[in-house]
Amino acid sequence: MTRPREILVVGGGASGLMAAITAARAGAGVTVLEHESACGKKILATGNGRCNLTNTRMAPDAYRSHEPKAVAQVLRRFTVEDTLDFFAGLGLYTRERDGWVYPYSQQARTVLHLLLSEAERTGVKLQTETKLWEISKISPKGRWQVMTDRGRFEGDAVILAAGSKASNLPGADGSGYALAKSLGHKIHPVLPALAPLTGEGNYFKQWAGLRMEAQVCLRLDKKNAKRERGEVQLTDYGVSGIPVFQLSRYATEALHEKRQAELILDFFPPCSEKKLENLLLEKKSQSPEKDWTEILRGIFPDKLCPIVMKRVREKHPRQIARQLKCWSVPVKGWKDYAFAQVCMGGVDLRQVDPRTLESKLQRGLYFAGEILDVDGACGGYNLQWAWSSGAVAGRAASQKGKKESI
Image (cartoon, rainbow, N blue to C red):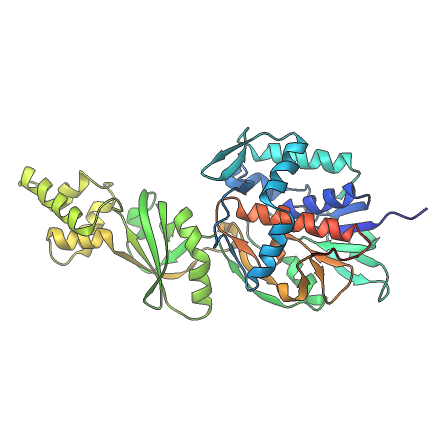
């Protein structure tokens, strides 16, 4: 009787649990090695605790990587439809808003509970509070071993799904990158990808706490690069909110390359600059006794108005409208990894087979999730990458290392 494949999954997050369940369903014996006290803690924080688990609208720029064709190939092998079918099979009922898919309960805990229940049902062993020291092959064509503070674990394959440095949760230390590097893999520079940005200026504490609808344009080396629109959070260090998150990976990458990055905020996106100027003139004619700060308070949040008037040289509606439509925030940097949702960079996909996510350098070593050089936009794309890459790696690792046909 053929011995079942033994798979070691390093990391018990979204991609690790998906890899483990997929491999176990295929008949493999699976052990998940997780250095935290419980698996899936980061899942609980996704979508502000509601778990935006995927997105039915796959925008062309939803994913960023040095190897976008490889990313697309993985996503084709386990699609959004596959993800929805998988979770429906676990008993999850979902709701959709503009393509963003959430559990109907609006609780991330629902998703994690179903994953852990399925892992238990399929016989996956969850070895928590286990610190890894080293991953190595026992023989060139043989089994693998993982050395930990709880002893040695052996398997026919290892799936490295150790996540990134993004998160304020304990354990998000990026240790998987060092493990991948020790096995010969190139690591693209790891930087926060969905994160708040810090700006140059001495007025940020005055507008801290404001939330405003705005259009945000990112300028790189004084050229317009990308635009986003939505609710912006004005903070004591700069700006945050989903529109800023969507642009942040391009800004952080530019700053890392010693290039210039600047955000141009439009605080009145419904109208043109000329229409805003005319609106201000109209309000002034209705209340000529009011100064411009008071006029602005009838339209914009109270905190913002005095800051605007300090920034305009001429107290003229044209200059005021220009300031509100083209508010410049030179980007100085980014908040640290604790404030980031995901990271850019990671294991070079040129060294990984996109059909299986097996290493081209080390047979029997697979990758899944954020440790790879892939980052997605806000909206469930990063969890979709976790599900897709975990399923592809788990499926391949359970099939005696045989590569699937395209």
